[in-house]
Length: 133
Image (cartoon, rainbow, N blue to C red; front, side, top):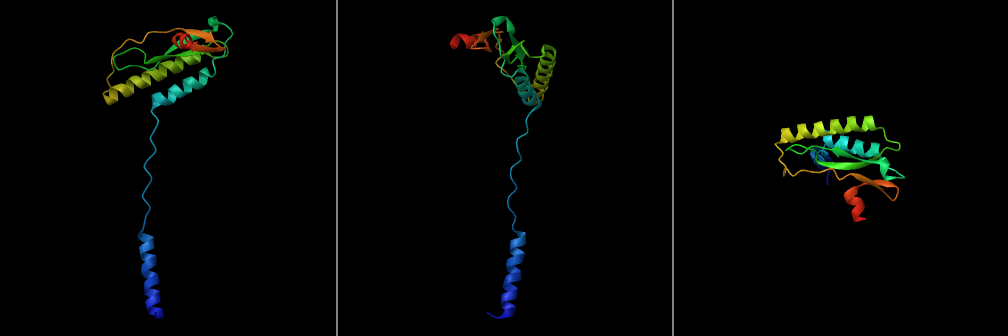
């Protein structure tokens, strides 16, 4: 192969290589505000340590499209700021209501009743969960 031909091949290869692009990675799914606030709620509740049932409470969280809470979380009055928790739960429910309206979300409209909470194995649990354990 002549030097000119070799140089031409190298230039052609370099030109082709510079045009090759790797496909862009798909964008990472973004976390909705209600999901982020729900995570913050669970972090604030933490392990929900307790010694007696009187330290345990249930908290309405989220919002169903038809109205009412989407569910409940158990929390402990031992070491949890109740005022901050209530404010965060209200923000999370409001965010979920906005997301439901924006997406046209529908729900089954079933009433989600407050199960209450109990101290089970030194942790606050929803009462329906404590019966199953």
